[in-house]
Length: 194
Image (cartoon, rainbow, N blue to C red; front, side, top):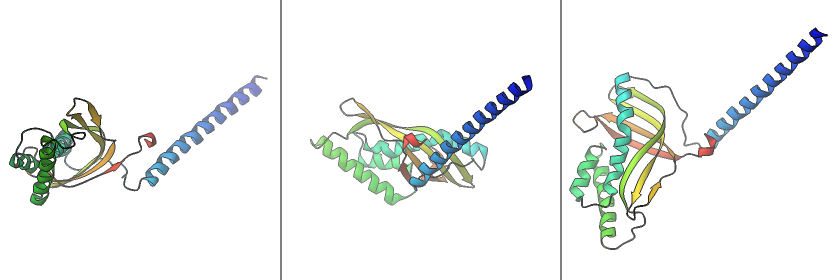
C-alpha cells in the first residue's frame, strides 16, 4: 500500500513539474513573440570589450543623453552655449548646429509667448536597464531601456515612454565624458511585454 501511495505522489510531482515547464515555455514563447512584433527592438547581449571602458560608459551614457536634450530647456542660454553643450555629446558639427538651432528656435518662441505646453526647465535621462555594451577599440555600441524625465515650465513632471536606445559612440578623450555619440536611435517598448 505504501508503494502505491509513493508512486501516486511521484506521478503528482511529475505532473506538476510538467505543467510548470509548459507554463514557463509559454511565457518565454510570448516574450519572443513580443520581440518579433517589435522589429526595431534588439535582443540583449553580453557585455564585451575592455571592462574599464564598459563601466565608464555605463556611468556616463545617461549624462550624455541628458545633455543631448539639455539645450531645449527654457533658460537664458545662447545659441552658442547650446552648441557648446552639444559638442560634448555629438561628433557631427552639422547635427550640433541643426540641433542647437531647433532648440533655440523653440526657446525663442516660448519666450515670445508661443506654445509653452511642451516647454521644460529640467530634464534627466533615466536608464531602467542595460541590454549590453560592446566596446571595440575606440568605438562602442550601447543598448539599454530608458526614458527622459522632464520638469515642465508649470512645475509639473512628465516622462517619455520607456524606449530601447541604441547608441553608437566614438572615443574622444578631449571631451567632457570621453565618448561622443556618432549615431542614436530609439524604439518604443511595450512595457507589458517585458
